[in-house]
Amino acid sequence: MTRVHSKKSYVILYFLLFSMLLFSIYVPKLFASEYHTHQGEARPDDHAPIGVMGDHTHARGEFMLSYRYMHMVMSGMRQGTSGVSSAAVLENFMVTPTQMTMDMHMVGMMYAPHDRLTMALMVPFLDMSMDHVTKMGMNFSTQSSGIGDIQFNNLITVWENENHHFHIHAGMSFPTGSIEERDDTPAGPDMILPYPMQLGSGTFDVLPGLTYTGKLEKWSWGFQGTGVIRLGTNDRQYTLGDRLNVTMWGARKWNDWLSQSLRIEGKIWGDIEGADPMLMPMMVPTANTKNHGGKRLDVLMGLNFSVPRGFFKGHRIAVEGGLPVYQDLNGVQLETDWMISAGWQYTF
Image (cartoon, rainbow, N blue to C red):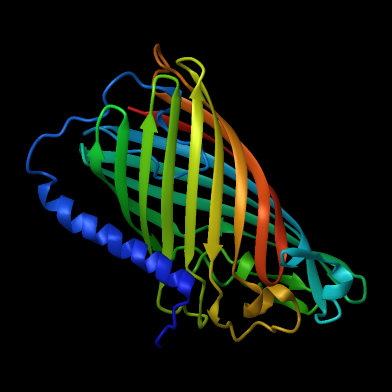
């Protein structure tokens, strides 16, 4: 099956090609000579806000274990940039969602076999719930939970000095998350759930990206662009849309154990191609592939805590929360209200 890429998909594709170009230039030099990085004392803002992944690399031989918890709430319907009432949605569908919550637990590990190469493994566990109301006024909820798509990434340092760092991402996501999630609904028992309630993409996905960070005595900042490029069609005859995430942040180091950050993040995600033949697109907006894709801009604030010395040296705790300031959604979709992340990291 030949896929037709949108302009948004081409942006992500160019991202991949750029990463591959840098990869081809610098990887042959990777083991050519010794390379000493990560100069100076550890700082609380050495790591980006906890909502940013793949933001840093490690010195040769270092390990890092991590745990992240992310909670997101979506409520109310939106078409484009305007809110839509449930009554208006029910003029065209038998059921409308009213709220969705998502909890993600992410277990991660990073290891650097070389100063210029850090490998990262991330294993997500998802717990999702969606509330609905029918045209007859009946309320019901559906749930799904389990392991999501496991991600493996290579973070390759391109350039670094005492105050600046730049690396590229060359990763892959594996289809370990279920796309067969079911629950009881008014339409019947054990019904296949719509796309947002599935745990994975069902496809192998390429994860290109690049990250730049800089720092001064009391300030630090960074920029990251990452993409998700779906490969092929899954077993249920559809392909989720490609994604592009761009974020930038600044942080103030207050002392050797605390920093505060402000971050903005833009997201673009494409439409679903194909369709699950078991879903009825006229039943509920989430089952209709026309009601997927869009763009969003979030503003977030965070705190990073690190232990610079003593028995707990190497441990970090961080929290970050925010909300959207702009949403433009394709078709009719639940809008995002707010999100919060917290996490622990330990380097040794």
